[in-house]
Amino acid sequence: MASDLGALSGAWRVKSVAGYSPSFGMPEKQINYLIGKRLIFRKSKIEVGRDTCLSPRLHFSKEDAFDFFYSGYRTDPKNLKLPERVTIATVECSNIFDISTFALSGRNRLIFEKLGVFYEAVRIKP
Image (tube, rainbow, N blue to C red; front, side):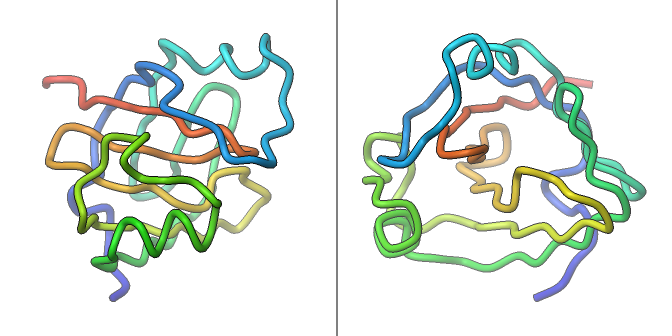
């Protein structure tokens, strides 16, 4: 189902590294760069650190967490502290953006993957 920003809209803070896929490929300094950065979802763009997704198109679906994360990333969602069913938001941008998927874990927590590293972000209270 295509949608606007929905449950993702607003400001989030990248809290920590939640895990790694077997094929992650970033040096530690680059991995830690995102910790503490803001993740902002707007209708016109998504920003995290120095990365920007222009003209985002989001598609939301409910998925079995194990099937989605193990099949796609060879990662057990239990290690990411995700429930059995998750809302997945896939994003398409008009430019190159290294993040393609956001997994919502409740209203105030999400997991996203960048180059094989999974990050946890929490909603910033307005």
